Amino acid sequence: MDIIWWCMYELNKFSYDDNLNYILQNIMMEENNGNFYNFSTKAENLYDSVDSDMLKNMVAMVVRKYFLNHEIVLNGKAQHVADKFFGQDDMKKLQILQAKNRIVKK
Image (cartoon, rainbow, N blue to C red; front, side, top):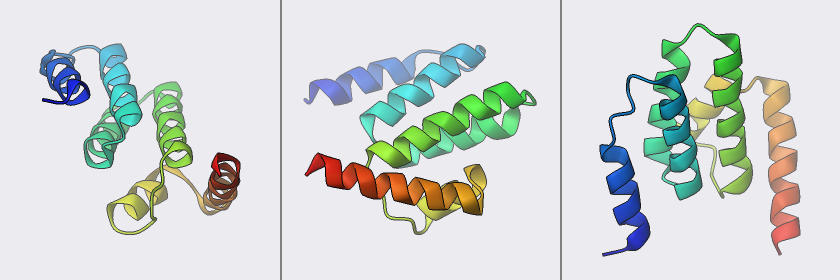
């Protein structure tokens, strides 16, 4: 069994639903793991359930980090998430930063 998978499984069993800090930490854990479906579902659920602009901005920054650090094609679910968290201008900036990251990684 893969140790990373096992750790993610164990950490996801933790009851984090009653504490916003734990929910945000769990989203950051999913972002670091790179599972886009789990990550985006949790990020959207938190974003939609809170009224705090500060918390919404924090979730948007984690989503931005995901798009910058992972190779992701903007179609389907990824396009939906990008549209939800970023405006047109932000998307253009994000695409430029993604291209820069690809160049630097090579």
